[in-house]
Image 1 (cartoon, rainbow, N blue to C red):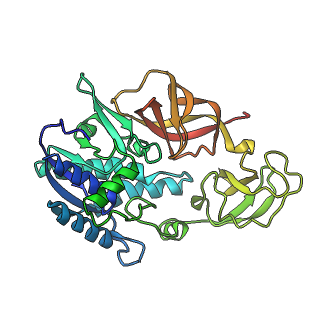
Image 2: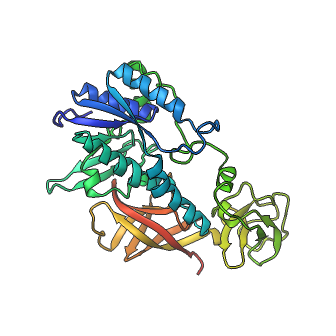
Image 3: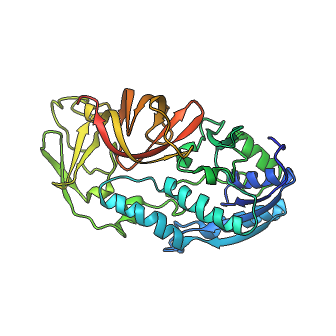
Length: 371
């Protein structure tokens, strides 16, 4: 835990979780002037039982009281709906699978929140993300993986710009999660044992298909195998993602003599969406060739250095928690050394050079391994 940075006025995003709580406590103990801000970004169904915003604010306020800092409740719900949720729905309606957490970070946590903090006279903001920032002699900021490989969140932060990154601190990025929990307990933070949150950024842990059903139009259609034979009916292409196994409604259907990648009793996986004919294509077996890709074409790149890295050898993730996959970058394409499973249009491909996150882009099209 470095204390070498000058004393600053730092606004910390307090989510109610243990990571942001320890971040605020660390900065306070380093002698900084710390202010907590709780961001409310969703209010369509505050009383549904799934939205934990009210409980989270109570937890954040309790943490602020123990640490001895001011906390402010700020509502960014309008910005979230306009900048994040509307794009999220557009992508789903088009048959792609977006990652709202990435857009949320770029548009809300490190834009709307950062702007608000700077207006309050902040020198920097801090969050509980497991990532690190390194300042180079040139003045450029690099985004590094968090030291805990099981918690690294650089994948979700890859769209940060130099202007944003230069004003961000990640106090727990140097720590393993076990140490964060230990410090929270040692310092008497009330959420030391609070369960980590999952689910859509700010929307919470709710039945996903039921939630989307309120916002997306849907047209049922056929579920077919790779040879076009009908196996069942889907409820709307927007409600499925590549690689999905659960919720297909064809668990009892067995295809004798499955041609490749699975046998008679192998489970079914979503392999493709036929938008023109409104068909969901499924295959049997996790290792089926139609689920494997040798490369991808990307669009809408965002590079941490504000300029594209040179073509060459790197590593990439096409989904969070994936092991870094060796690859070659050439223009707007990545080519992988080994097959990549269920590369999904709309998701992000994030590029790394060792521990350095270079940025990433939106996956536009996957290239089949056996093309």
